Amino acid sequence: MSMNPELKRNLWLELTPHRLAGMPLVLFAIFFLAASLDKTEASKAISGVSVVLFIALVVLWGTRQAAESVNEEVRDHTWDGQRMSSIGPWDMTWGKLLGSTVFPWYGGIICLVVYVLSSMVAVERNPVETALMMTLAGLFGQSVAMLASLQAVRKDRKYNKSNAAGIFILGVGLTWPIISFALNASVMFKWYGIEFESLSFTTMSLAVFLAWAVTGVYRLMRTELQMKNGPYVWLAFVCFISMYVAGFGWAEDVGNGLFNMTTLAASTATLAVYLMAFSERKDPVSFRRLVIAYGRRDWHRTLQELPCWAVALPVVAAASVCVMLTSGPQAMDGVPQTSFSMLVLASMLFVVRDLSLILYFNFAKNPKRADMLMALCLFLFYGILPGIMSGMDIDVLAALFWPRGDSLAFLSVAAAFAEAAVAGSLVLKRWQGIYGTA
Image 1: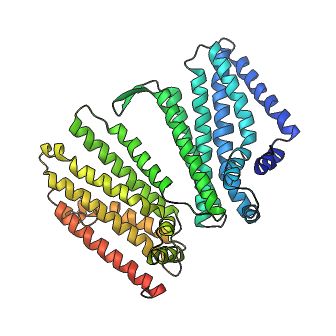
Image 2 (image 1 turned 45 degrees about the horizontal axis):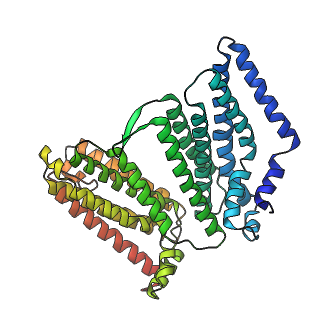
Image 3 (image 1 turned 60 degrees about the vertical axis):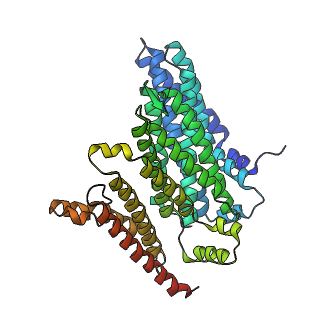
């Protein structure tokens, strides 16, 4: 069986004889130095240094390599040639993911072996499971970094160093807290009423999320190779992540527990909508294809052309309805249940307003800074303006920008509906200016 050509190319580039010989020599020199500095507890010192080196190699260096693997191809104008090759999306996915990070992993595996052996000598807890957790965390961070870089390439095909830096920070920012939590915390907590130990739960969660991240990379690689994806995998992920986060809202009191869980689920799905609304392309041509497919009643193509943020909206709506239905126990605090329902309704209408404004800015003739302008608007709508009004003791006007769950809830709903209607009409007018009444 022939080797994956993309992986083979990276192996030849990354694993040169000098590198293969130099990495273990440098690492074992550092281990020897750590043991020499702390002779009384040499095994514990080596164990700690091996974790630090693993983080430096796999989490820092490896994540950067994964984030840059596609961006470098775009910058060097070789990506289009690779896209036209005979390599399939799955081979390209794991060939890039494992191939670009193979040298950091070469050193990282050495560090893991040393960590397990030294931890056994130092009688530290669960060294094998901890090593497995660190492996999954490293792969997860690298997969997320590659996923984000592919999404950035899909949105804007220009190489941008600030984007690359942001993607690197994202990958490291997700991985480092996970490793730190699992290494330093030995606590028990409940998820859906089931008690877990922190290390075991982190390991199981990482395995699942790693599978989702690799699936995301594979789907984006398909789009780069001019293949179409359906909406069902993304819809399944939004449902999964909403239910996963909801499990942390479990409470012994069933009523409060259900309310907490549905609120967390709705908030998570809403966050997914905003995340994709900002990260996806929103050019009129893409929406034109969607309108044409819908006009022809080609439902298969219509679903393929749907943006991911639109696919997640039904999950937001369903979870929001569940929040309304489970908000009864909160009425005991003196706030009517109808106020909670109107708060949820206002929140949904504000989401519609925000999405409409995002499209309005992106449908402009020069949408270069459209998303940045919308981010500034959100900062004004949900932070600055309500804060100014509260400081001036005119909280009643804050309901125009922020969903309320008190006596002003009705005003908040009315304002959100009016703003969503105005924003929607602006989008429609700009669309008609581009394509007429089609």
